[in-house]
Length: 242
Ligand code: PGA
Image 1 (cartoon, helix red, strand yellow):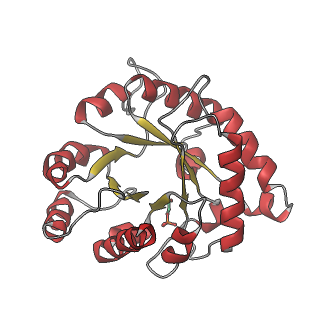
Image 2: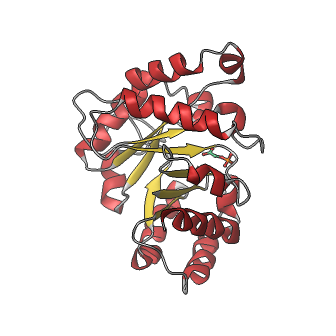
């Protein structure tokens, strides 16, 4: 399982130190990985301070170009040099505010794989799609257009319904189970594929989510900023495995 904290454009250097203090006595279970995704300038500092605790670091986005005149973008090379294990690609906020398309997601994910960084490709339907009852087809299309060709391992899909992000509302557990199942079937040729759920995960709903056999972890926004909640969610994932 993977418990991933997407800090988005929140938290600062001092919060990494606070987090380090809080996890000082916290025992990670080697069957459940913990990863955090801070803002770019914090990545190196986070890596330096947290890797002794076996916490993995990930970037929130990357360029789909290797290098060059792309002001403000960050290359997969730098993300790799910093020692990131993961990179989010096509998060709905990037799709909305930075025009990241399925085509972009595929290109960026392909580049990440060349540097041995595991892409976490975010997919999810809008409320409109959901109301039309075409979610499964929509997700299948997203997957087909976003997943790199000839990939055989090293991929995570984060299923994040747009209407669940930051709203406190989540799909019912059967829906989560089923959509994850659709994704797993669609990508059954990928070894060790993980499908994690994101969108308003908190320490009240997480245990029921982790009970679902098709869920391999969570991508957590708001609740990852409250470190006690984040650790409670992590513990709940560990309990599920035992
Ligand atoms: P949330 O965000 O947990 O605050 O809903 C999840 C995400 O956007 O990855």
